[in-house]
Length: 391
Ligand SMILES: *Cc1c(COP(=O)(O)O)cnc(C)c1O
Image (cartoon, rainbow, N blue to C red):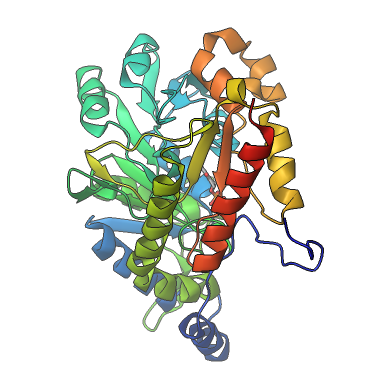
């Protein structure tokens, strides 16, 4: 199709968009002499909780840390069970094992890849303490159904909201619904601080516990200790962790957050372009979008109809790479990962939807830095791969 394939630029699967404001704020922080958790992190937390509409926000150095602290705050104990989707990143499961608790994996819906509330209910036992649904790709789970189950069985709910900044359910930010909500600012996510995360809650006790646990179990954090009028004195009240977010990272976050809605609009228009272009192609199918929410469009996932193509998903990805387009797969389900599979004796046939869909899904580039031409190119390359390889 193109003569100059090798000289053409590669379109990465994901790229952050960092502006002058982020850079100037980092410079300001570096000149201030206060690099670690301090006034910029406080501002980032204040801005963040306002943006979400929650009472409290605790900035940490990853979403994984936020999820871990959420389990600590809730008081998950050895032997407790925590229900999580299999269609997620390993972080959702790994934090459960930090607590010596047991992750209980459930299958996804094949059209949305979201957790299926009916499957949650089937896996509840006397030991179940927490559910951690993932708002996969940036689409809200069936929140009413999940919260109803949680209430009935007296379970706590943590959102793994790594994809969900911002995601809305029935008009409200999903950060307002669960006991604790954990966001990610990893570099591929909808806003970034390089590495970073935020735990959001309306519960003061959880907030205090997470703050203390995030900084060595000290009774006061460094910011309180070192600010004017602070004191040298501290008490260790628990064996904590080192999860605090630096002011350098928060400097980036403050300005990324201001652009979160603009970024969303840009991703949404890419998503509608994809949806419109793929609607009439039977060889691929976009994931189903539920009418109850507003999608964050962190991911745009297509499922290829392998029965109508002479190439499989991996070959499809290779062909896209040959045409200079980066893609990814979200996710290799945890029930197929060696560690989780072996440790919890997980069988592919017990996760029929995830097992099947794993061999069909491809995540396409979707980020504000993409130009209209980039989007067109992705669409045209997909169409040409299909026309050459259809059965
Ligand atoms: C990225 C991601 C995480 C982990 O986020 P970090 O900030 O990198 O710790 C957790 N869960 C899901 C679903 C993710 O995609």
